[in-house]
Length: 442
Image (spheres, rainbow, N blue to C red):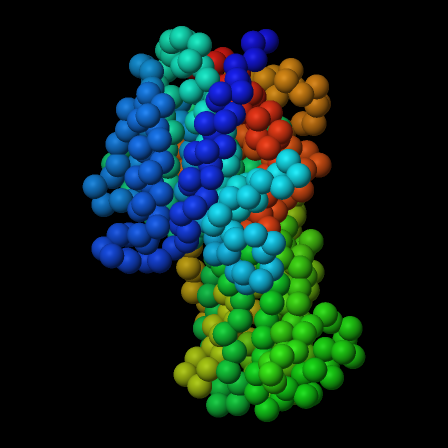
């Protein structure tokens, strides 16, 4: 097989990636009249500028929800990318500034290096390498750049309402070898009574297991004692105690340590409240919702995951925020009914915040077969295609899958402090993407 990736391509790729990481493209809804924030608008415009310099035709949605860049003629092959990122979190946890890309020991550090600026640009420069070889495409290769992937996917909803659908495609926003099945994604809020004795606002994004949850108030000493007795990691400063967990993507909730639930389990016997008791009695710390649903699993996609992402309690109200990844063959409505009834038993009302239907492309399809063949020939790795609890833009169009860019065994740092991508892995991914697009589009 031809190797398309030159040193010049690699150098240009690194410079472009450093540029995109410099934009703190975190959701700031409605800022300066933009849909999702000025930095997101700016990084979208900059990305399309880079694409034009590389020889692509570009388009930007007049309202700023999405943009795309394409090359070639014929039916559409989509490469589905996103330019927004999750917040950096506590800056003191970073060894270098999250929005200043830094290279150390063969890794490029910065928010978006893994998710999803690094992989998106690896795919973009892969196609650029084909253009540099004079290759003519028999399909239109279109990079679709979304701007709201980390929250509600409103960018792709608008794209799909207005634009042409692809005949096939992939999202470079997961792991190799390939993800053919993605669980349904259900995000909910449970609303309940307030409290005159508790004030909490802990947790973060729906799709991250919270690694910190702080309490400040009259129960400070008792909470500290309870955390010590439970052997829960924590730290104290100025009459504030912070429970420490282990962050993971919500799809891997069972592998994380949820700081919100740990704090709730210590607070519940000290200051009774329905939300605290629900978290302690039913949500639990297994990350699978076993206390609510029992065991929920299937062959294509594995077990249900259940992430309590945040908790708010104040005099006016309480709110629990939950991210659930539902196996592709499970009955969503049955699960909703179970959760609704369980919440009701604790004076909590169910509200659906967002739902994304599952992805499933047959393992023997032309697309899966072609991409798996490229990956196996390039790497020698015979790992079978995967199912995932993650949610990528692949599920927004028929006949699309998630394809890379994280290799088996590589450290997953997305959504964490010190997010980083191994440069040699990005170059390997670029080579795989170049061969894949060559076979699919010529």
